[in-house]
Image (tube, helix red, strand yellow):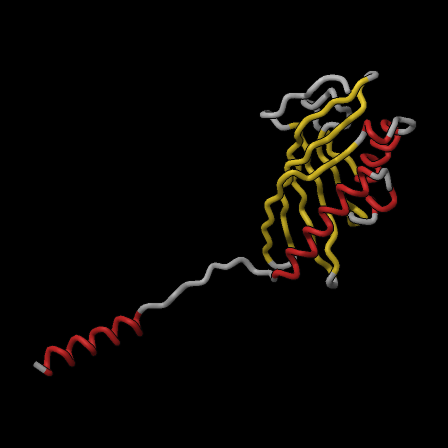
Length: 170
């Protein structure tokens, strides 16, 4: 009776030693995720507040924007330097009531691998259009990089959500 018990115990120990648990947890820490999410929140806040210098400070010097530059032309995407994109947005909303331009983050999905992070955002944008306001959801993809402990945005790609309907006047 002891012999089968010992054989079973040895077999169990051998199997336990042969098994290894693989950990495919993405690199990064909770602190990194919090820093990136804070940056994403500042991104939406600075745009909504028309703080163009504050928004620019969130991007690396050679950052790019890819997406429509005119609200009604969501099918025409351009890749331009972030300075050009922010300048275009600033000119487009200059003089309009603050209630006619707003960016709100509805959902976000964060992934990190070492010094790079990607954030997929669903945002709600209010944009001034010909005497009214275009109100719709946008999908935005931000690529961020950490250099010397500082996270900033490398690129931003944006497009109007195909599921979103642009709502009329406000």
